[in-house]
Length: 396
Image: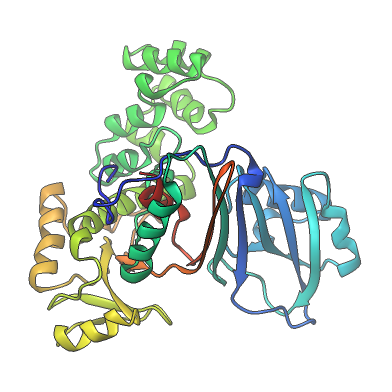
């Protein structure tokens, strides 16, 4: 995916992002406003240098709540300034100010009847500074954005989906294919990709079969790696040791593999990402509903108006596959991976049902300007899509 671009015929601007959290701003666009009554308090905060999970952990401490009781609509990065809403049960509006500190500003606190759920947002508004671009960057960015506005943004998950070592999908693949020795090696990490000296040394020791020594060297912050090595050191099999990890972590690896396969299909469809093929499964952007394409020529008119787009699968045991040429692409990828859809029906609460996801997403409300420090770009994307998919097209 790294060298696949929809706008490959236009040079990138170059430059860097996220030199400081203020250079990458994200504002949630709520799906609905809080109604003003109910047992849940919708607290909107502007935070800097904090992940969503760090915010939730603090809210749980401050208001004596369990983390699972706190609702949120989407996850936000730490290296950014983000405005997002969380819901707190049985907290009074006047108490919300207790959440504020030097990195958290409480913007509003309004009651609502239900807990905020993941996905309960319309999209996100981004304002991003691209520092140190090449000469002529403003003109290049304008050309690229014109193409993306017309054809859509390739809906890649991208590298941020695959973890710090960019190998979460490899762990998921090994779990799905029941190669637990390989999954353990991937989880501990490839020494060539690890920068932390103690972690790197631990990974080297583990690759040499020195599990006890690796565990002793592994840093304390490597929580799940340490849990794995501790069980292996006590003589557990790689399968038993790995599957002892929390299900939400194992599902994270499995879903990363789903994402990697999806990205490969997007890459195969990139040149015609705005086209509808006979046998496609298309989705309606207004509500996400999917349907099988019968008359491609007629549906192409709707795609040209960006009402619908073709989809690719997040493979799972219940997912609907396309037919025709797009179906051949999807089945050929499964065949190449040595998989069938029933393989995704793992036990122990790890079954992956699968779903369809659009190949492209619309980018709207684009604003672009330049100053002495680089480019300033603002745009809006629907929920579930990533700003990095747009930025990689611009910066290349």
